[in-house]
Image (cartoon, rainbow, N blue to C red):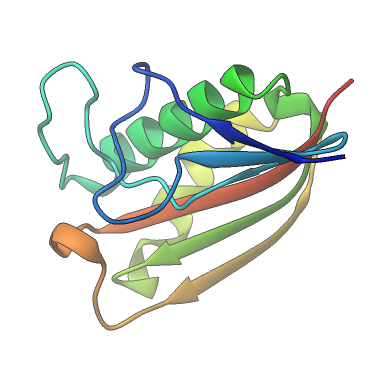
Length: 126
């Protein structure tokens, strides 16, 4: 069982020396996805739209690796401002309706490119 490096043009390219995602056996691990629109390269800074774009990027990497949002086991959310918690949850709940993976949400001092949110996920291939 080897590593499968995941790459898709439907999510922004890595901003450093890492892969968009890694497949290992039946698991798919995404790298943290910033709210960068993959078609324009624009960093979205309004928190609700940024959450949506970051989750769309997570979804694209998962799908490129053979997984789906409804097979996500764990999500980690890094946020610049914990005061945005309820706004993030509002958008997050649109992506995870009946399926509720384990999740951590952590306020951090700074994110790459001065983003407002970064999201990573672990999922299994169905």
